[in-house]
Image 1 (cartoon, helix red, strand yellow):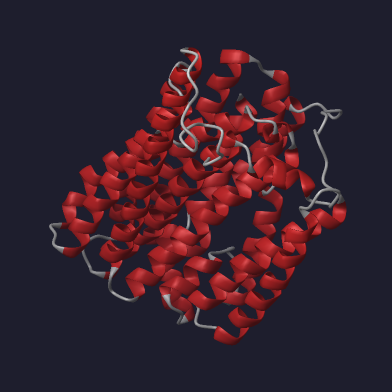
Image 2: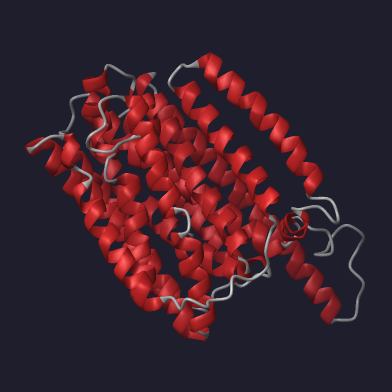
Length: 413
């Protein structure tokens, strides 16, 4: 449980401790906010290119943290113990999201943005210590994907995210070249998912209801999270409404709510994941809609209650999504858990880029509105699927045959 908690803190602190420093980074290097959000930081970097390399090194180190920790919890903890542990993982994520921007905002205001990596370094030491004590050296790693398959996944995802980052920085030639490489690698990877291919397991996992639902919840929650973590403080700071520290404090309405939800969702094992998914998406949609109103029509302080509502929605998705995924066949594989985590963090990055680009364009409210609509549509879709499945289950229990196309036999995940 300690390892999961430190893993949650490490991931979120590294991800968001510098969001309130984005404006200062952009100003120092003469770059757009979107470009700074795409590269964010290590303290000694003399330019954005070095920042990007340093950030990639952090990502490479943290890539294994969540998958290995979650798989270890699945093998070493059972039943309610495991649910509680993942609940505390969710709580630590929320606490990291809450206090990392606040501490970082104070650091930026007092000594400058180059010192905001200090908390990340301290957590890195704690992560090493807890990992050595908590995870056995002979931990089985579940089903394997061959090395060539892992390389294909890395090329597709790496070039895809890099293309988005380059586009946000208006490096169109680089973005185009990366997009072509991503497309070619995607075609090759698609062929590798056929029976007997290096990635054949991915096709089977992708047809699992639990995998698709938990992935939907995790990605939508992280898109909203990344959008808010970058977009809200940048909007408030750029428009002269608040300073960096005050903007970080406003974000705590969402993040502390998410942290409080972690232990609650970890204990309430009787609530089905589809119900949590629908409620969480509705909460995210409502909170983002409130932010859109605050950004477009004002007053700006409407952001505070909107962030609390968003926190309730995101908290209903954070650890329950990971718990639901870990209970599937794919959840027994570190490769699948890594891909799940990749989808989460990729979604966070996309949300952050969208937030930075929307503030650069002077339309942050539009970004909040678009993601709110997407969350609302996803919630409607989940509700309709759940109703059809309930009808099919009732028909089967009563000995009646469900009408063609009406039941759970069709995979709509």
